[in-house]
Length: 135
Image 1: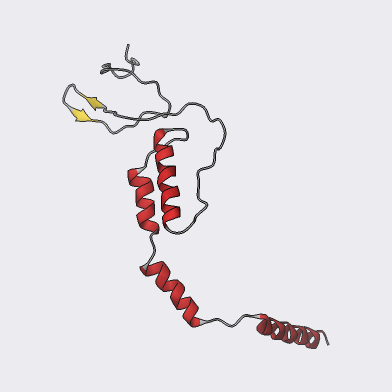
Image 2 (image 1 turned 90 degrees about the vertical axis):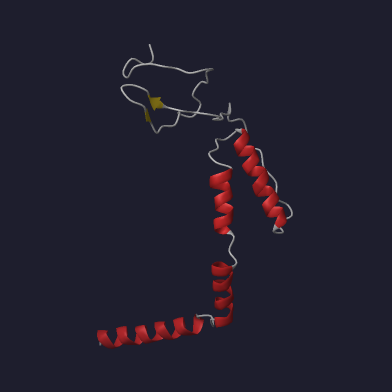
């Protein structure tokens, strides 16, 4: 008796589910695929944000320039009310203009590195030995 009840419930469930599904329009699916695969600007936009306007920290000039570019691009594609919104006081900004790190003795070797954000700036070159913190 229980097997017949479960079978009847399963048949009723699948019947209702099959009637509840929307009809899929293959032309709409094809248009979505073409738009995504042939007309997408995602990689172009991503390249601008990562290669041209990067790296950027909040409250930095690069951050503001990237925001201006995004707002301009949104308006260009038809999003008329695009604007940058203030997000409150974050504190100071930080910008890296130039950084170079190399070992000079016993032979020259460039060292790959990057200063920590908000590191204090200095004028000129700093020389030191490993482990002495520049003293």
